[in-house]
Structures are given as structure tokens and as C-alpha cells.
Amino acid sequence: MAATVPAECRMANDIARNLGHLPGEEAAEAIAGHIGRFWDPRMRTRLHEHVDAGADCLDPLVVAAVELLR
Image (spheres, rainbow, N blue to C red):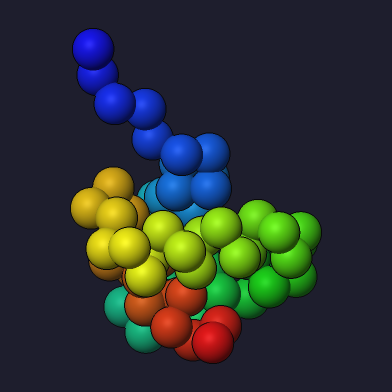
């Protein structure tokens, strides 16, 4: 049985794919801005927990964006 990707990881990766045309740091800032403005605090907390746990399902830009949100 294949492991499922948590919803927060999937959505954050979708955002990263949509903003991936931007240069690295600019993309991370745009992802962080989107998550900070539009995500519920509980969703942000779960995303932080996935990053802290070293979730390998996350795009590196998402990890950089979460660090900017801290």
C-alpha cells in the first residue's frame, strides 16, 4: 500500500510548483507570503511539524518558506 502525502504537504508543494518559475529566494518568499496570508493557523502548525519531522515529501522551496515563516 502506498503512503499518502499529508494534505498540507500536497497543498504546499502545489504552491511551490506554481511559483517555481521565480528565482529561489523570491519563490520561497512568495510561498511563505501565500501560506502566511491564506492558511489557517492550524494548517501552518501542521506544516511546521512536517518540516520539523524531516518530511521527505516536501519541495525544498516549501522548507525554505517555512523557515522564513518562523
